[in-house]
Image (cartoon, rainbow, N blue to C red; front, side, top):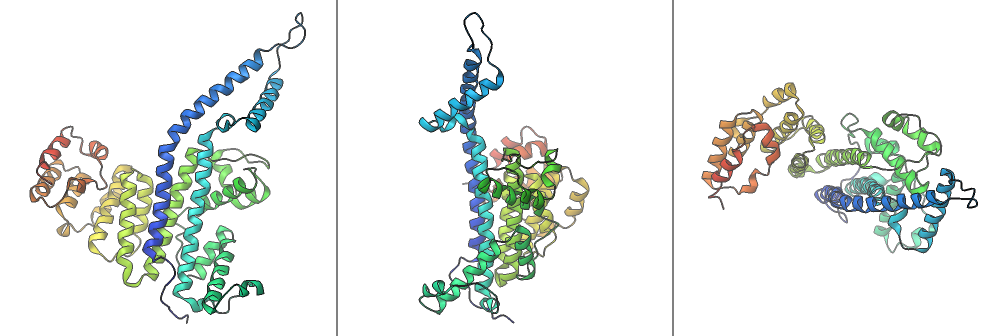
Length: 413
């Protein structure tokens, strides 16, 4: 058996998960606040390009007596040449290319890099936890590599880095097989659409190394996923890019894949630290609900229902939050079934209020919220749970509930 050692030289698993979550959340925040500015800039550049085409189109050719309109092909050729001159000699990066497209393209590449970092952190953590698992592994290390090592520990670190690199150089299917077989971690092939992640990785490779031009490797490795989604068969040389809709679809899948995969590792390797792993799951689900990402939240909630949650309070929270997503998606039969798993006797007043909302029980909701306010043990921010004001507005169907809640909380510090 591999010897279990103390993990050192790397963040704990809470830090690994937090870093992944923070990275992709910051990326989404950046896109949300940058895209509107770039769309305005793109609008101006499109207008300028249109005016340039109109000018070229209006210029006659031939003698004064035999004027002939310039053909569309000639206009486009002249346009391309002029834009090329502007690009090479004038600082106008916004003129030739839409900046919104560039934003999603670069953000997409960064997103996939964050997922690579997570896989790397997981493998590092495993081998630092079980250093003897590297014994007998065939790795190519040169004499020059060893000469750079000052001691035995540094040589072991080098071997570890080589092992991680060898896994990361594999295709996604190879990485997942390694995680399943070598690390003995469930990759949840039913909960995660790994085919979408695989296509995204292959598209990232095209964008970085082949300017987005479809090649034989891409067509072979994606197995028709894109053709089926976008309609029409892709041909060699076709150009792929990243728009808002495509980026969001991949973003959601990377988020789910990262959260689920990391949590599976955390609960397996964390020992007594599983409580924090469960807390992290609860936070991830609430964040999705607060962003009104009902579909993604429902998928994460469905995954949570399949794993063992030891802490009763967290289990109740996860169940309630899962029900919020089901409610918003109109999954009535599933919602009714999940309600049966909620232990109401151990719920706090604020959670009872949420259950009342899910049951369309307005009186129960107001009664529990009033009790919470009268006890004065929470801040108003406690209501910033999975049900924000717009969500309540549609569920409770009561135009004056905001005034009632504000009045109830008027004495709370």
